[in-house]
Image 1 (cartoon, one colour):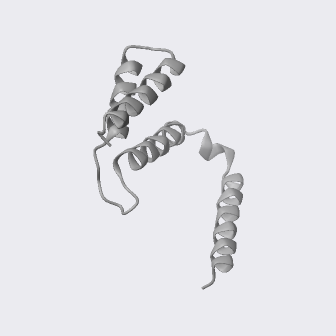
Image 2 (cartoon, one colour):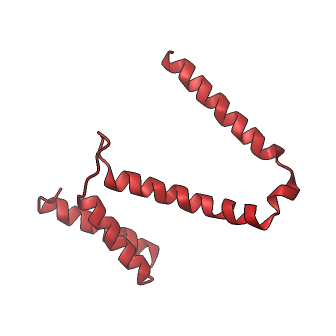
Image 3 (cartoon, helix red, strand yellow):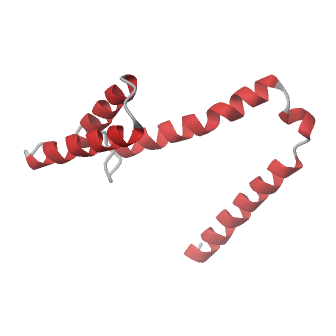
Length: 104
């Protein structure tokens, strides 16, 4: 299978999933269980992306480096109710300082 065939198949699947979302009856979407699940999905997906980018390498292995420490500092700042920009700056500074000191 060539790359273009794979891209077209993926685009077709994405379009079909979007279309299926529009075809779901409104009555189903108003159920409390469905509302809870759909409200939590973006949070779960974002958490999965953060964990994947923080604790994995290009080869697929787990790693603890400056990224993990930066996320830890950002979590603490969030728990202390720091503004979002402060959280981002603290995380970036943590990663930069650790990399500067040689702790990759």
